[in-house]
Image (tube, rainbow, N blue to C red; front, side, top):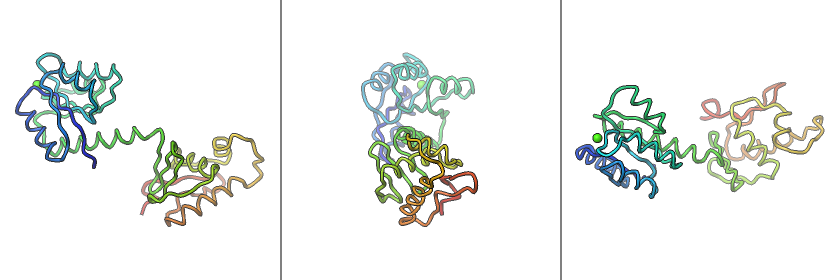
Length: 233
Ligand code: CA
């Protein structure tokens, strides 16, 4: 797990000290703001991986801070840490753009688990536009690289485009028309076994590295890239 740069906006000294201690013990870098306005300025001007935000602050509500950050297009994940237990406050917090809500008093392990979960989710969504994964397969659309078990596999242009389409549409039956229409922008005679040939090339290159059969033939329907429990050992 990577170490994160975390901003804690919290006016209660005891909670602040505890959160800082718990996070620093895990190796994270912790910055502190005691007031909403200060925290907001820091969040707008510095780069944090996660913000832990109290709701009851002396100068302004944590919800306002959250709202301002989102209005300024700051997508830093926000974990609200608050004594307010009621569902309305939680829902409002999440609607304002917070990523998660933890009520005080909290368990240290729970705090760390929530932070890990937020971190995982944000890493995933950050990558979602240019890399896709399926079991041991991974494709990087920006650098046009394909990996099987972290081994870089060279693909031709057509193979790469086909693989990319599979990885963007995992666990779904893709018929011949859908594949050919989306992968190649030229019309070609569907009687040819063009597609089958490329699929056999891809299978061969994947099978050189892993025994898992990712690209499955679904009889009379098409093909499916199988990810998850069915294809993982
Ligand atoms: Ca407070």
